[in-house]
Amino acid sequence: MGSVPPLFTFLLMVASCWVHRQQFIVIEFLQAEDRLLKERLRGKRIRFTDAERALLARKAKAMGRKALLELDTLVSPGTWMRWHRRLVAQKWAFSKRRSLGRPGIMREITQLIVRMAQDNPSWGYTRIQGALANLRHKVGRGTVANVLDRNGIEPAPERGKRTRWSTFLKEHWKVFAASGFVRHRAKIT
Image (cartoon, rainbow, N blue to C red; front, side):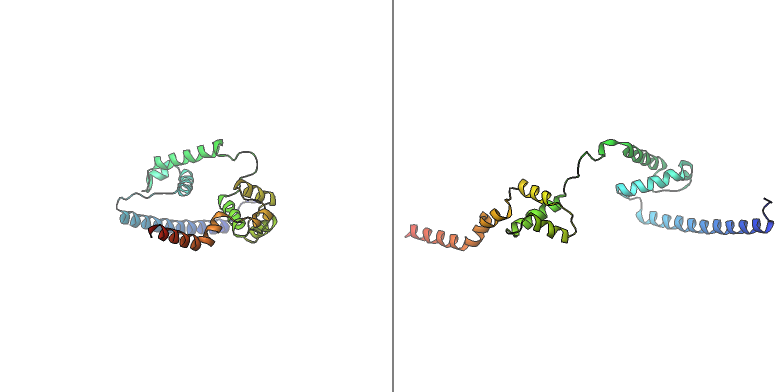
């Protein structure tokens, strides 16, 4: 293996200078944009979400404290490093780890199962499971049965035979109102 030809070395040096110059132009643009945004904020604080803090903290840690001190950042370098330490601590905190067993069913899906069963008294577990699959929710037949049982809703044949009080009252409200009016008028006379 011989040495690198001088022409190749020269071309490599030219290419690296061009890349360095392009990076410098991008950095200057971002710094100017940052200054303008800070002027527009006029000292108002920006509230970052946890995800934004995590992203910026990772980037700040990669840059290092010295480079952060040279920049005029929105937050002090100490704050960036504190956010990064908190991020690392959360990564190794096992308290937020999921417990053993299957994950619980989402509240929205539970409400959907209950509503489907109440709106469609003739639908059984399998029919509700199929309707959920049409909505792209994979739920087992046993899960549907457990949700309905926890909410005091009977299986399909019994559910179809009985009328719920709310349904009964809605259907007979006019009769109740009229009979109350008649009885009230009878007491007056």
